[in-house]
Image (cartoon, rainbow over all chains, first blue to last red; front, side, top):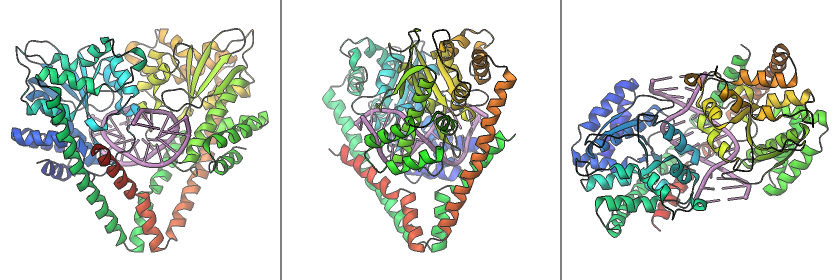
Length: 294
Length: 294
DNA sequence: GCCAAGCTTGGC
DNA sequence: GCCAAGCTTGGC
């Protein structure tokens, strides 16, 4: 089903972006629950065949927002994805069970070939500010195994600002176990986990940058009422799935190398000039100079 | 002299980085004042022939730190550049004239072919935090004409955190006019300008994102005791210089296109594979999968 | 391993 | 015009 979704994204991305978004939304929202849950497990990893910086990449990202929004709904919240671009979160979700809170969320996806995931790329403090005065919590959902593994400024920043760092894997585990907010069961303590951790004296000041994902796992397992052993088994399943995915993605790039080896001289040269973006650089400089030149 | 500096950077960048840094430092610190002032005018624009993501780019950036540090010394402060990498500012400067303050600074340079300068790339809130409890001010020095021209989150963030946004052009104007901190003349109000502006009621809350560079210009002109008309003439000179620079940089890229057109099929194909970084992608995925596979 | 130094395309 | 969505190399 995930493969079909990416096919649809590629197909729709030739249309007007807003129309394409609506088509993708309809496709995602009409999936059967079981199909949708499979998509949640895969969506954090952008397929290598989605080309970088392209409209299809933007539509893929939008699709991941729509997926996350449906996840929040399956967890028992009301949720919509937003159409803003600058200086705004992607998604809003709101409790419907009388707990009177709402949250903003940001969905992140990376390719397996992604190199440095920089602290600035997570925009923790910006995300925190995007809550504004209307929303209590803010949640970032990124691929679990692509978070910094030992320590990072994103952890101290998140503790500081009360940003909840979750992963697609976490969301998927909650869904697979049919966790749902009701009048008698609140998810609020998950969204609020960073603030709770910040009050935990075992996370000493000097160590604020330490990766707190294991702690996060404990919070979620406790909320779900499962043992850590069981929880780690869930995570391990996702790990295996990503490994399998990696083999496919490598095959894709090897195929690309083979294709290029068959190129004619003319094709290789023109594509080399294109790939090096030389004309674009010249155009950028010209436009810049022109602006300065009035 | 700037061209000679970039030549030296390319030459040294084949050496061990720390040794190369020392060579560059010696070269910069031994320049005559007039030569050095010419370098300050150019250093904000990375030459296109410095290749992206390379050691020479890193050494260029380091050179710009060393240049900025010498600028602070010429302005009458004590200053050193730091060798840290993550989670730290590049430069520290300290007042020697009895005003008892110190500051951290960050030097930024861009190529003329640089496309989006994203708000996250300025890392305003991080820079602010890097002051720690020891330093009063924090200063970002970037190319004047590459700052957002109308409005940006960087302006509201800077007002919020008291980050001083300056440019190479500003520093150069101060140097050209022989401005220097002394027992009777403090530069503190320049480094503190953002906090002062934040208190200015004419910068209404709703408009906090507005570009405050014109205001900054007024502060500096006032400090220097020159009229705005004169100050704008200075800025205009730099504008003309950048326009001239752009013509050279475009010539460089056109030369590259001509070179490529002469390539043999084999060379074009192998360089195309290299430029597309296909092997690196395969390697990154493999390493990632291997890490997950223990 | 983290993330500084850089970077591009396209949606609003 | 701004900056969301992504991205890489190499120094510590």
